[in-house]
Image 1 (cartoon, rainbow, N blue to C red):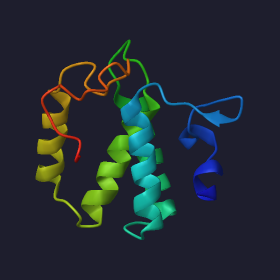
Image 2 (cartoon, helix red, strand yellow):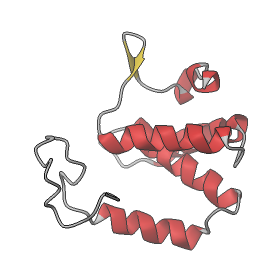
Image 3 (cartoon, helix red, strand yellow):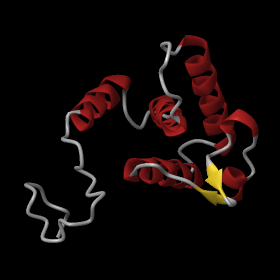
Image 4 (tube, rainbow, N blue to C red):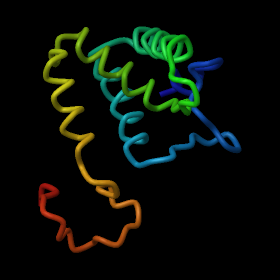
Length: 126
């Protein structure tokens, strides 16, 4: 989506050598989900961008001293805002699912790529 690539300023996604940069696997999934839902018409890209700018501004105004800025945490919060505003999910469902995902053990996203046998206790839709 060219709209994503046209974002500049504080809302611009992190890049290295012109390529989007994702520090963790969930970040690329959140990015793709926002693009897909905007393309599907759940919200406009302008609405998403406005939510992202608002989330970044809120973080800048109210972050804890020493707290590291994480662009995709703001991105995910903006995505949650848009999904709730569109009526696709209610805020309680989003908060409950976020809490559930946050409780998953570190490494659950298979960053090391060693678990090709999928022997980690949940299915992948196979």
